[in-house]
Image (cartoon, rainbow, N blue to C red; front, side):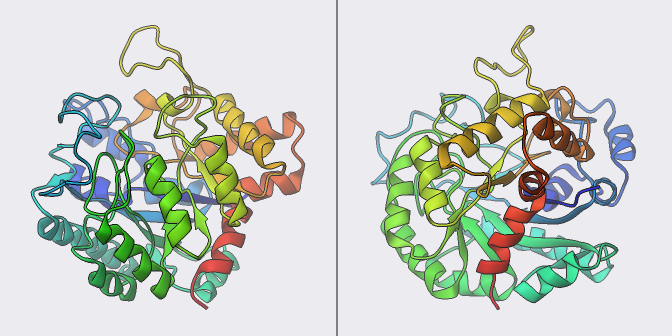
Amino acid sequence: MRPIIDAHLDIAWNALSFDRDQLLEVEEVRALEAGMSSALRGRCTVSIPEMRRANVRVCLATVLCRALPSEMPQMEGIIGDVGSRGHGEVILREDLDFANQTIACAAGQGQLAYYRLLEKSGHLRFVNRRADLDAIWDAPDAPLGIILSMEGCDPIVDPGQAAWWFANGLRTACLAHYGPSTYAMGTGGDGPLTERGRELLAEFDRLGLILDLVHTADTAFDQALDLYSRPVFVSHGNCRALVEHDRQLSDGQIRAVAARDGVVGVVMDEWMLVPGYVRGQPGRPRATMESVADHVDHICSVIGNSRHVAIGSDLDGGFGTEQTPVDLETIYDLHALEGILARRGYRDGDIDGIMSENWLRFFRTNLPA
């Protein structure tokens, strides 16, 4: 079974916000959540035992906490009122949002503590340097390797605190999530980097903290490329040419990431895979793993090779099997992509790259020595 690197999993957020024991089997978690009211309850796809069964050797494990900035002079008029948008663009969520960055920072440190406790008990290992990555990759029985990632930088209370997060294991981050942040405009409209965002990018450059351009509004995306000198990547994003939405990547953005020797991770969220999807609507278009392969195909056709596309599943990123491809029940089913790509004419080396080795190359090059 091919090894997998998955560039986006919200392991700690699920544990702390939904009280999910990530050390249980998926079926055990589903049974415990049976009868709970939320749509995603009882339908999880990820746990650490299931990742081991799927031969997921390494993942980008997130810190995810949001705080709406108190003042947004550079963002006025860019987005509508809270609650007026669709598909996750509503800013206020009880399982995700905090009143200010100080509280978000404390909550983020709670997620970091969860990962550290799992490391202490032998269930995972932080990948801080290239040697850590090689040690895990060369030992199939090693604990799950995690590269600590931040989805939206609200838990970084000011640019100077980036050094503290880096010293404590943070290796990648995107500037915003949905809506505006202190640092940049995120998904849900277009807008720039803020002055503090520019300062934070300078700190990332100095530290060697790798910039993830996911969720970054178009204007901020271009500005970040101009200001940040190192390679960039997109942990979990699909193709705007196939499903129109500002959350998706334009062909020009895909080319720009590849030009910096970056990689794009394809997402398993149905609304990002098939056009015309409306959450919960009977008769809505449904995605399959063939739909995922369509986005892989498109990225390869835009770039001209398969070196810059891989997996960033976002499984259990606020949804469960009610919103995954119909033939994906757990993270194990990512392996279905291998046979689909083979039938489409991809060579073994291309498939190896998409399942893991493109991310392996990227992080071997860009993690600290």
